[in-house]
Image (cartoon, rainbow, N blue to C red):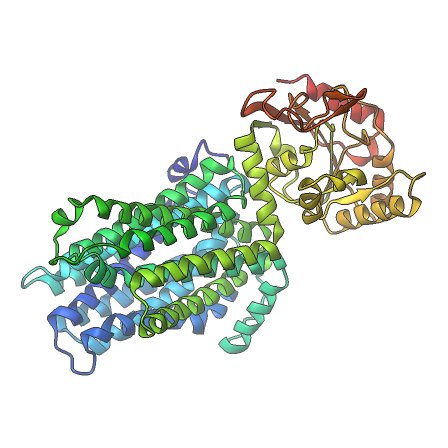
Length: 637
């Protein structure tokens, strides 16, 4: 598997490009078909039993229903069979559905088209688990964020193009219905042709016995997802994003007409701005994450979503009444640019919020159950989108204006995000580490590919400052549990941060024998659970900037791991150019070096680095050898 130069380079590789264009064609066709059908029953046909006011709601509900009924089954099939085979079967099914829908358009047969809406929902339900379970098999872990960003961007661009094409084609005088029919079949055929080039992605659980009962299997999938706390709460976080997005998307037509006093073209412009924002945010994730799964972007995304949703309320509530405006008149008013900026930015931050969560779920889910976990996510997404429609309808029924609904959603987003980040502090910790490594320091990492992607390992680093652990968090794609001097927990703010990170306090054996032994017991448990353990074997922060002798605690940790039957590699690391910064001990007071005085003595945004060396097998480790390796890394630039 060859690493790419950037996420766009994936489009030149067979392991990604055919899959990308297959899912792009599917999303475009879904929306071309649904939007053309909605326009047809709203403006062109008189159907007594389906009034225009209910048409969009009925079509949307029929499309979502299969996600509730069949997601659990789709997840099982994806785990059991080769994903490329599933993709090709689903795209063949799409051609058949679109052929039937084509006849429905030509004959103006609304019941047939409603049936096809349900069948296209089934098509998307079957494709959903494949869409996100395929990526971890095809991409390197360092490519997951970029790959997910490309898929997320492609999906929203496809939705936008599909809706625009559907609206334009169905409105063609005399030939609209036939043109839509031909377009739907053509796009389905294109999707099937690209699917043929998708490389094999072998089954992850070929012996799985499929449970065809959707109710019991749905419950089992949700319980399976609940078994991994970080993954399950990430599923809830993604579902909340769909709640948030659905609230805005569903209100765009009414918002454009009643609040902005614009015509249908203005409503379409809002959709374009929202889609472009999501796409831009999704693509930004790789750039902002150093090509690793950086969940520190999630709190940043949540903050932006709330800030700009709330500002959208203030930007739109004071607009004066006016006659209905076309696109040109709407754009000519400066007040409307603030509205569009808010929409663009809240959707951009939604992209920053969602992409790392998808990548985290793919990375942390057990491969044999990954598709079923994603199926559970699709079920939760559908439930949250239904809840969005119900709650938004209830608020409007209670007398809320549309800007007030946006304000309520922005405030609710802040509350929900805060709750999730307190339940899963890893998001908040990574956010703090991300900010420190980009805005406090210019942090450059070399050799981070040496950090194991899975399994237990001990990370050994020199101890230069009070924020060493924060910078190591920023460099590692996986969470690290640190063994740290108990005195650092007394430092304001940092002590709270390290307790939140579940760092393990250790005291000298002579000072507190019980705490000393308890620390090594907890360290052994970290390695038994297959996680990363970070230690600073100097035993304390350097007082003069030089590398101090390494203590023997690492040998005790490795001996305990050997007793547990674990082969634990030791990864040497060296923080460079950090001595002399605000958080290192350099200022003398009463003959003792102290830290955290004169914040800008090294200037703002000073350059620091981390060099990561080749892992050592436990059998080769000695404190003197480790110190020599770290010392050598300190000389590299």
